[in-house]
Image: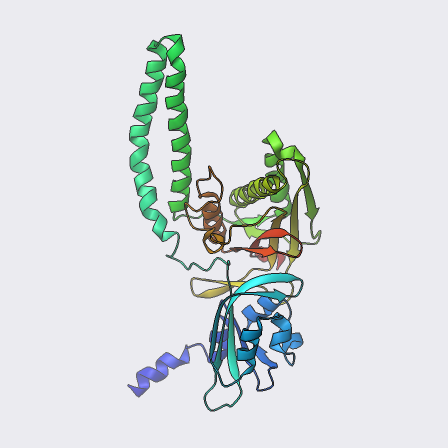
Length: 366
């Protein structure tokens, strides 16, 4: 037994490697409330490197906190579990769950975990796997739909002119349902498209051009670009990235116009930046994938309904009266296929809703 255990331990990650691989932020706090150590995810969440965090007070980095939470957090001998806290991290607000655990044998020392609400946290085999059954059902529905459409077209040729409108309505509704089913099948697909180096700014401008070409009220939107001109190529599927951005830009347009009453005043900001230092990482197939390229689509709409905030990436969840609730589910699916992450947050101070993509950098540009 000792020999077998020893052989197993040779390839076993040590404690430091295990902490580095965590997708939620972990902070070691000393008896005075100062940060003694952080993992990579904490550097990303708090927006700065470990060298700048160590020695500073945790409550200053994520404050101001609810007085009751801060009192419990500074009582170093008490465990704490706090859910759905709104904290300010640098210039931005974030919603987090927080735990604080005293360390037995080390009076005053605590391990604090911070997990951001709204990040795409579903693992492989999670949310997307649940979509397999709808995809199979979609395939079975398409055959009778084709027959119904054919019957509607045949009826249109034989009906009097006054009744042809009813036949056209049948075919139009069948086409609408077919488009919905196509999107369900995309969600249920388990075969991601190929990825390659691509220019994220070209994908963004193509998505914006698509929105403008759609016409209607799109012309009343003020679209602002805040691009990092030195941003390296992203490792992505160009078609999938463009589809993701089209969905996010159209959603931002609808939210901004709804808040402006369909008049002038709707604003969309698309920002790109390279997240320096130890960037946000995703765990894919047991390994950490750095995601240093960030694309943010922001709008000045009213924001996501608080009741839906934690469920916006789930299928069939929508705040739009005629929404199908598949757009953001497809966004999450396509982003995960590219080994990326998508999240959202609300900046109450600036009145902006932000949807953020974090994607890997193309290898040749590393």
